[in-house]
Image (cartoon, helix red, strand yellow):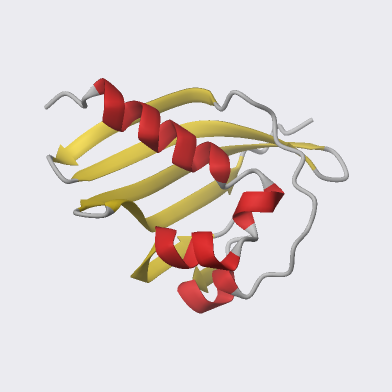
Length: 123
């Protein structure tokens, strides 16, 4: 299965939006984006549920764009896995492998799952 260019572009836009503080911490936007059963394996190793993600306090996010090695693979015609490498400046540059599962619904793509894994050789 090959992803349509429009879906690829939409998923890229959605993933990038999660790295922009004004969007990431917009409660209405995030409430609409996350599926009711969303969960995340955070870069810390902790597991977060939807409510924990929605209740996060706003903070600065210093991510590098464009997202590196951005790929979309269709699992089914309505389920996509997105993978990429994130580069985010915290106290130091942190590089992470990222993976998201997106579901295509009648109202657009919804985020079901996300995982961030820190790469050990972060600078």
